[in-house]
Length: 311
Image (tube, rainbow, N blue to C red; front, side):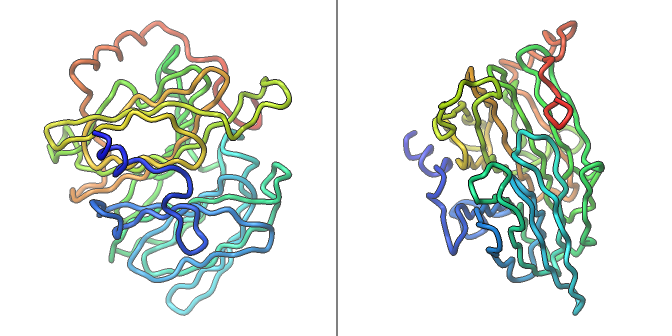
């Protein structure tokens, strides 16, 4: 099972390529439908989004950006105000069609004084062209899911109800310290119309000390835990301590929980896509643990939610 973990779980920087801190795409062994690119840029630095035949969603993680993009001979520049960090709540973002190319330039200092801004690009290969679209921060739906220690915050910007994408589903989740998310463990690895979707999935993680942490706590030591395991679709085992920049790939199998350790809040962004004709997120709980959902009834939502400017 050590080989399974090494194949499907990657520390920050292990998948670096061409100025990107992390690259996952259809060249990654065993991977076909989804991808991400993550980068850190100093003010004024740029990275190109080259080639067509791939849809992209540009998501600021910290800092602000300018995206120059071209499609059908028309050049446009879109400014992304971004956010101080992923724990500051929602951000605006830009969906680029499969016929567009672009260049992303950092225009701020990352909001933390580090001098770096960070962004992520969710991708999926496709020849289907959907309209390029700017999503303003006020358009990003916020769902407060679960209850008690299973409370978490979900930004559903990349589901079909919000974004007219060709193939992928993209969401981000904030889990307060000590809480569990991606729970109960669930899967989406077979096509069962009306019941379950066949979707491979990427988890990109960030973890940070809680706001109340004392001065001097090292954010690089912030951590959480993530687990995934086998289903009838195939063998899989990841039981990992996760830190900012780590990536888990879930080709099939049950996944969850993602657990925020005491003292540290957890964020992750998911990219999902698969061969199904319908772009839907339908899941099956692990039957050994699905009963836990019923225990949420009557429990209160965690009062630390929502994360955002008003918190």
